[in-house]
Each structure stands twice: as structure tokens, then as C-alpha cells.
Length: 272
Ligand code: DGL
Image 1 (cartoon, rainbow, N blue to C red):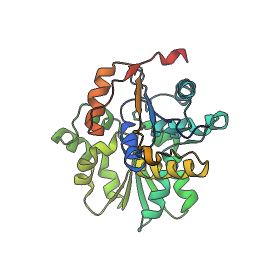
Image 2 (cartoon, rainbow, N blue to C red):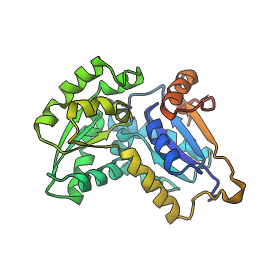
Image 3 (cartoon, rainbow, N blue to C red):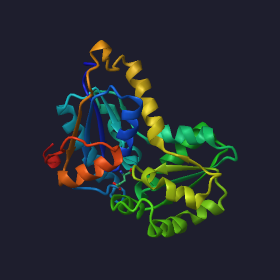
Image 4 (cartoon, protein in one colour):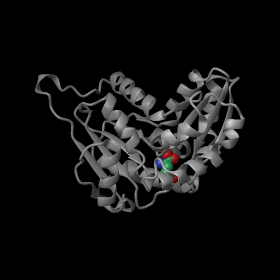
């Protein structure tokens, strides 16, 4: 496998760009190919068999780009499909749930951790099981927050409507006296300041993207796949693919990545 080959990152749509942002911050030399399944989002309310089917198609697409490793940026895919498909994947593949659970298990002081995510992620119970494997005494409280995804995509990152909905969703977690809250969905880091306002300063907010990028570095080092730029200072290349309107994607991506990004290309994912 070539060290210059790109890292493939995929998500059900736009939200996985929060993971790309973190990978670029921590591994600025790596080339990235991103696929966002913008035509079929959301995955969070779909069945496990559908999410697995979509995941297999996306993996086949990423293989055509000769990726050297794959990051499943989507919490729903990480929770519903990763374990099921990973044995057949010919390159290293990591998800976001295990890294996020690891950080939370180590961060909690009072042993009470909250998890918010899509219905699928919460129903899978995977965050809870990973946390309990690492720290059996920790109590985990989970809550699905389905409206957070459209609110984030509408750009209502800091808005009274978002604050009101967050207050309702998070009331039980506040009452449960958690000291650590996992933002277990790609979009939720965009609502961080609203979630912070509602939960208060004493609750530690965990963005799994950070630890996922750390794990990606460890994985690339382990397989001797880190890109070497050396003296040539080769600029990394970023390519974006979507299954629906590329222009909407570009606008959102420029906001999340705080940079002008190359035009995304629309592909027919159902043909893979
Ligand atoms: N990317 C999904 C996740 O992280 C959120 C959007 C969706 O439901 O597809 O779970």
C-alpha cells in the first residue's frame, strides 16, 4: 500500500466533515477522499440491514479510490455496521464509537456518563457496552436527539429554537448528574456551545472526532502508512464526493472547514 494513497472518510452526509476537520488539524499532510451520502441521509432512523447495505456500497466506492485506510465518521454506521463489515475490508478501518467511549470512560470522575446520538446509535447500545468493558462501574445514560441533525444542517448552531430543544432533550441527563457527555453524532459538535449552555460548565463534553484522529495516526504509524512530505512540502489533496446536490455540500463544507474547498463530485452510489 502506498503512503501517498488517500485516507477514505465517509458519513451519511455533511456531518462527517467535523471528523475531517479534526483529521486535517492533527494529520495535515494526509490526502483525504470524503464521501457524504447526502441523497440517503439520515441513516439514524433507518434499520440496521439498510445501514449495512449502504455501508457496503460506500466501501466499494472508496476502494476505487485506492484508499490506504478508512475512517467511518458516522456514529450510526460505526454503531450499526462496522463490526458486521470489517472482517471483509482489505485496509485498516476505524470508527468513531470506540475512541469516543474510551475518552469518556477515562474522563468521568463521578462515574456517570451521558451519550447523545441518533436513534440507531442509542438503540445499538454500543457506546454503553464499550464504556462498561473499560470501566464496569460507570453508569451510562443515553438519549436520542433526532432534531439536532436538521438544526445543525439548517445552520441554527446558536439559536433560541436550538436552545429550547436542547433543554428538553437534555433535561433527564442533567437530572442524572452526569459529569461527562459524549456528543455521539457527527453533527453535535456544531451545536457544542448550545449544549454547553444547557449542560453547564461542569460537564465535560466529549467529541469523539478528536480521539478518532488520534487513533488514525496510531493506526497509520502501526502499518507504516503515514504520508511523508519531506523537504518537498507536497500539499495534501482533498476530494469530496456526494450522492446529491454538490453545491449545497460545498457551502456547508466551507462553513465547517473554514476554507474554500474544491467542488464536490456527485456519484451514483447505488451503482456500487
Ligand atoms: N452522521 C450521523 C451520525 O453520526 C447523523 C446523521 C444521520 O442520521 O445520518 O450518527
